[in-house]
Image (cartoon, rainbow, N blue to C red; front, side, top):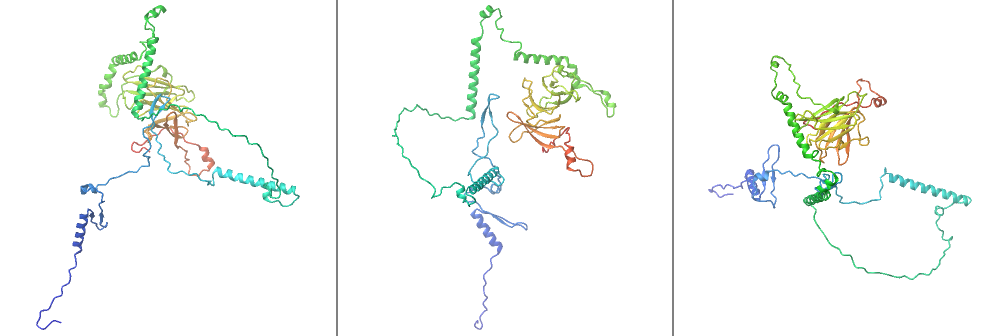
Length: 481
């Protein structure tokens, strides 16, 4: 109580801290420690980004907030990626794109067998045969003993302690002799080197130069002199065929194109500038002017079954010859024509059966895939002078059983292998992949017949319907699958 006449004393209460001020102090303290607090909203709670102790302190907030994406792959980092192997077919070194990414960390061989494996079946058969043999032996011993019980150990022929005799003999041991010789070790030399891509290439080029020089020296040593040639009655230099050489062939080809350009100059002018003025007065109609006419002696009495322009050389196109008279089939022909030389084809390839379709590769412009009447697909290289395909399907490699109506190249797969699709009357759509030495196939789909009737068919009727014949196909340019 207070004395009379004194002023009343007010009790002072401690001030409660403001939560906002406390949050500001904590935020300042966290920023001093290097942490970043992201304020929350009504949808997400606030979160704090803790700066690692080993982080570079000079990074800005923009650099810290930037996200970096790392992709983890299942590739073996120790696997080599530049393997070069010698190709005996082409007599050159080639890089092998297939890299084995499989790595074994631990391998243990156990004694367990799978219940559905063949090894377990053989083990069970061996146990059963052993039990049967033991039962037969017991029955045999029982029959010999006159029906007395026989122990299983006796059936196995085990030795009883009361029914055996021990025999021993002593022989003269010959004396042991040791004989040894000492020879001088052969001379050895240690050699080490690192084989890289460039060293392999340099050694290969040096070997090519040595072979070329050896061939030139051999040709000079065997070249007859003028006196020897005159003595034999032949002119000197007769062995060098200059007229049929490669240089004269290229020059003759250029001259032939120049002569054709002069001969067909009026057709070239019509191709560039001809226009019929009367087409302005015709609604929805026009006129056509025939320009070039491409013929070949080998293609007589054959039908033109396919035409494809080269995607790179716009003046060149390939023509496939076959026959649509299926009762009278003959050999086929592939001819390549150019607008620069309409009088003679640039290349020709003959096939055993008629050509039904063909297609140029969009990137490798010298490769042509061809589909034949007998179901064979093959690949030709126009740079080769031989009249044989570089790849061809056979019965063992999944060739079609009916005519192939369309082929189409596709982009390279992950292993950088060339591949193309084909469709045939046998109902198969097949993917063909160009391997190292053969043509590999995989059936993408089979075209099955669908009945138009609403009644359900039995399994026997469905199996008799077979597959539907395919005549053409195409891929979406935006979606490859």
